[in-house]
Length: 558
Image 1 (cartoon, rainbow, N blue to C red):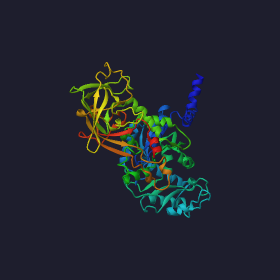
Image 2 (tube, rainbow, N blue to C red):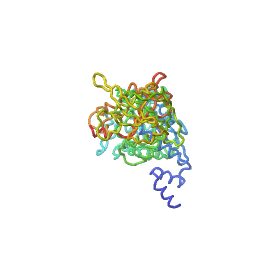
Image 3 (cartoon, rainbow, N blue to C red):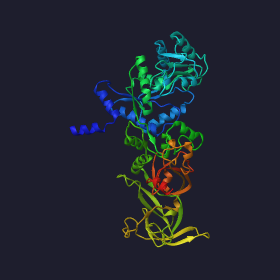
Image 4 (tube, rainbow, N blue to C red):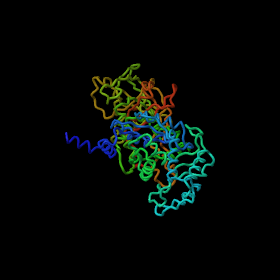
């Protein structure tokens, strides 16, 4: 028993160790975490790690998680983003205890700022942003006091009230904390608490024309909600002393900030600003383009919430930034789709096969929907004299070890018969238009010739029964592993072959009943999902991922 306990202790990440220590010491009866996105864009795969971490910790230790929108910048925020964020979190499988907004606390935050002024710990500064930056110094040189730093408490209270009343224009004044202009930590050099923005807010309308900065709103919002463990990414490590300073000086509930490494994924970018450029410059069709690393894009591409949660679990929680290989994410979705995807036969680049000795009008064959499912069901597949196979499955003059169809060579048709190519028909230009083949009676499963050995099995569709669909083959959006770190404009490294559209692929008729919530493996082609652009007249399928990782091989060829 002790050995099992020791093994469990070893497997805890550093945040779980902190939570267990806090609960064990009686610091908290229950834990309360929060996920605090700014509604200025769509969530991406990096956010999914934070979502899984915050909600997962709370679930594991019987606590709760708040969803709090950091809506302190009305210029960039929108209800569209609020709605998309809520949809993404629910799709990932999580539900929040309370839906809150930093704007809920605007009145309280204003009073906190007044309290700091009354304590002589904040002042109104008339300096321009350029002057403030200049006086702040450098990491190796101390800053200089603002000429407005010595204003009296009474004057600061009046000026701040006038700011709130709308008496000044944008940029005319700011409220700053009075800390230490020679502090080694630049964030402690009299940071800005409030700025003037005459902009309409998506929730508070025009009630406010001053808005708190992130560093001022964040910790106090945590404290107001009694958040026990405020989990941020590593770039907020230098902000932690300021987080603690505000809580200490305001004498409010002592929330604590902890930092973990953010998710950086290869062959993509994670910056909202860069993702917005891709959308605005029309390198992608929108935030939910299946090539985007947004949760909406991954969902449209066919990723499952289970696969993303598994991915987050596999990468774990680190204290140091590193670049995670996108192949791991693709591995997670392949593993899940292999278990749940329905198998279907779809021919992308067809060549006609005529079975010259097949005399039946048609027959109905059966094939399992998913061989990985012990309780799999079976679908019916019509078989007839004229078929389509993939053009790449035939070679007139095959090299050694080419085991698919060629003159005189036999292959098995999946869930059907063994066939042999007897004659190749070409047009005047020498292009192959038809393969005349013979089939071996009794060679399908259960027949007298079923055990005859052939070295390849290929997929097919009956021409008369085939349904057509558009197929979109998506690949990685960038050609280089870390586009954000390359010289020049990151957009110069966009992969021109990230999308290939096949206007008409031919599928077995069972695919005509495809549903948006189902996943499909197109045999030997990859995993696919029905796209939202589909209509009753036209099915469109997105490739989620290939059956295996061909990227490395393709790069070596290049």
